[in-house]
Length: 326
Image (cartoon, rainbow, N blue to C red; front, side, top):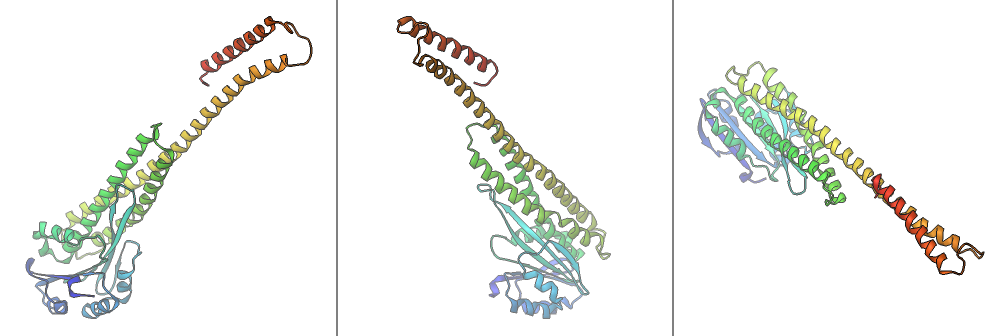
């Protein structure tokens, strides 16, 4: 791992003092009671994480979870720190596919360490949230944890809103006869898959925020309104995903019902045309018998058979038309 993949910051008495100092200096600043440090490790290897664990006395299990790529969002409390992991989400509007990346954090008394994969996630979004709320930095590392989770939850909320918009567009396409059924099915399946992934990321966030906001007695009172607001956003996102699950299921079932209805309409039309074709077949078959019949061998017999076909077929056509079969 290169040094360029590590970012650091130092606050002293809540005021930003230094950035991008050497990773090895972390333990020096942590020992100073008026300091708060942040370090970000992008896609770290095992050696760097082992060094981090030794530097800050981090639990081995928490370090293993930080590098795992498919951990469930959670908050775990250890003797010297709290370990948080959540997922940043992004929805591809064109394909309906969801992209996600794991973002983990170690919350110590005077240090905050974030770990995430490279890929598309930009840690600057979290740094910008801290800078926008610089007055909160004097309340310690819980302010940094709030800023990180607030950015991630906002991103999840945006994805849920985008999914809602996409599902509404699907509802409009359902009754569009010109729309291809195959395309609609593929789009519905992609959004349904993305919604399942979103729910896996959003639903556990209630416990993550609850652990940080309500189970830690050392959270400053000034920060509690911010954490309560964050918890409210998580609840809204959770409830929204539940309602979207019902919506996408309704779209899927409605699409199947509409296909059945269209198939029934086609079958009625085919049956009606088959019945119309059966009339001339029956009449001509009757007159084709090798026995004398009224008008046999005369022009009047031909005319009468044509009239019978026309009258019966016309009557049957009008009956089907009146009943909506044609």
